[in-house]
Image 1 (cartoon, one colour):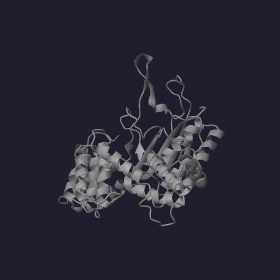
Image 2 (image 1 turned 60 degrees about the vertical axis):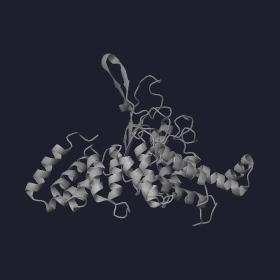
Image 3 (image 1 turned 90 degrees about the horizontal axis):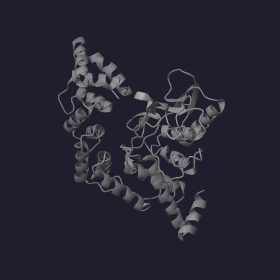
Image 4 (image 1 turned 180 degrees about the vertical axis):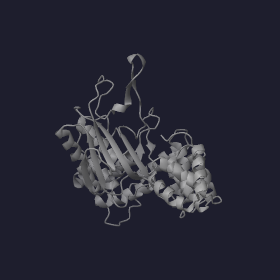
Length: 423
């Protein structure tokens, strides 16, 4: 495949085979970025993609549970794509049928839901998006881009639990299954310019394409870690792809390769960060990380600080959480525990579960503010209620150091801190 693509590029572009290899490398790197580091616009009104914030992927094996009603052929289809994706990602996988517990990957097969075809054109249209309003009117709710017909829970880029909902009995069941399974493995985008099962404009094929296979292999290479930020992930992917394509030998220097693709990524992040879209905060965080740690761009403390504060000051809970978490990292040269507590508290008060957990840890150890075990325990309680698994053990372990009166006070404080239910 590599040789074929290189020769094709040489023929079409009129370049040498060596140059064709570099062209194919740049194309492959751009595809990886589109598939894993950009996602659909969050306001669903624009085709302009947004940065994901970080690499999203599993870091351990899968225990899959299949539930619901389906034909034997549909079950076989699901298993086909599950096993192929797991093999490409080099993940172990076990599958169980029927209701039970202990799984981290759940696939629910829903019975076909009859509505007019113009409203429900594909098997990927989940049942819970449709309801009947007053007078028999039909209502269609638009989900957020990542909650299409799936629910992916993660922490710092590590997928902890995935639930897919597939509508059985449809003509395009296979395409929907392969599409949603790739979502479940961390592919977040719907690039409409690529030959991929993630492309919603190409409903005529279901099997993973070469683009899909390349994306999964690269995403699950040991050099690509969960939570890896945008530009750092691109640098790592460039090395992986260059070695795999034979452009450089193992460990070879890739710094002079694909720089137009890398420069374009920086430019797009800058443009978003300076704009007023919902993606501005996420893009600013990515640039702050890059300038702080020298990911492709040169280390620039001033730029790192500027983008960092810019992101959080926009008031977005996710940005405040990310900035607070970054400022609290022990190895971060910009570490500022006091500022971290401030940002995390703002995010936590807006019902951000991750911020609740990290804030509880800082308050428990007296970082950034005088140690406050009651407040720390209250935040652990709230984070645990919102299904942050690490918070459950932190809450249970921390309670041993508190008195009965402190625990009671913390529970009362937790009820007042964030009265709104988790969403």
